[in-house]
Image (cartoon, rainbow, N blue to C red):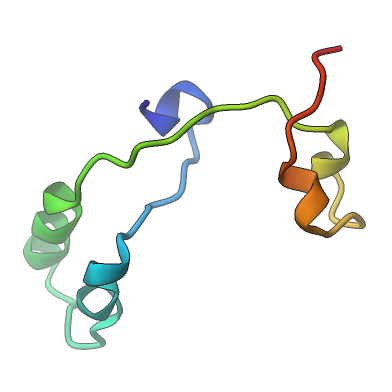
Length: 71
């Protein structure tokens, strides 16, 4: 699933085996960065409805990502 279908300001999802490459402080060339971004695999995501509590920075905790009933 493309994250852009959910939100236009989606995060870049980096697979663990690419962390070192992503965090390399010497990776500064625009073309190299674009190549890296273009070579990342499409993540497998499962959308779910969550509580409206996720809309406030005052709330924090693992329970915020638990599935909720549609309203």
